[in-house]
Length: 354
Image (cartoon, rainbow, N blue to C red; front, side, top):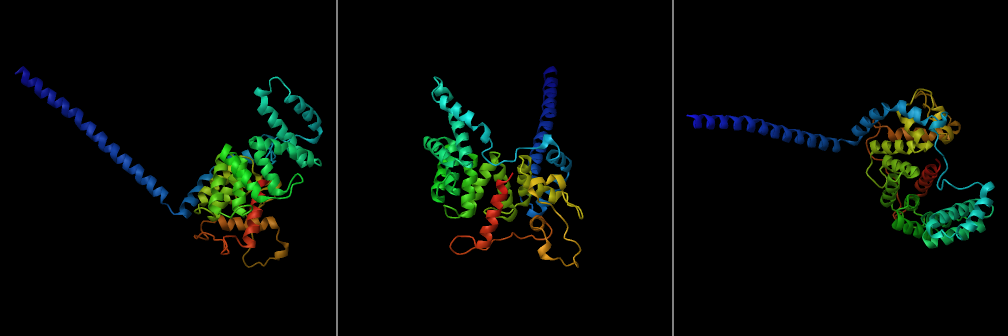
């Protein structure tokens, strides 16, 4: 009797523990299935819907953007010079040149070689940008040939733009950018290589590869590259059009100090009738204004160029006006037509100015 009672009790105990376990397993399976379905539906959302959701999300962050990006607030200011950012002024060059003279003679040179090379690069680039470019070019070329990352990229820029008394040679410039990217994954070199591929300078034009390098540099916190990547996503140039992602990257560029990106983001998120964005645009001068009543004719000669840009941006970002991707017309020789090329070069210049 005792043995039979124990067996019955044991069976009851097993049933009471197994049933909840199976229920938990079923619920877990159902939850995972629901999450996967939700993720799948989110991925497959039409591009306009995702962009609309992105607008709602970022409009909820307007107060933060206004505070963080207010140029009247000194704590929100980020240095606005393009790469390189640590170039010395002309007034302190003599003292730095004296320091460089004794730097390589130091008994600790092997331990401080990077410091000496970085110092030489700063001096060289400052000289190249001054009236004594002939003295700076040998310094930066020497470092580039030794494999100094910044100097490799900087020497490539000299070749691309014809700086330091050099004759412009885009093909050699691209070779230096590629070498620097392959050896060091240098963010500025990635950006410069992306620009070359985007405009077809020194290399066959390839939008897809250009976008790849813009994205790589943007992931390494290069503000200009983030701006360019966002701009390419807007129109689907070299990648699938995704305005929600474009807005994300423009916001990131703005957080890194790119005032043009800040202006573009605020123009979309906070457009008001007859208003502009005052201090938020600052040096970018990209203000947004309404076009006015539809029946009111405008004198094209009186429309400010920056206003044109903002109107164009509004049309490009408007998720309700056009659902199709904006296309660029090409020639059959794999090169963009002159109008498109001019537009691309303008975008690149905008990305360089932060």
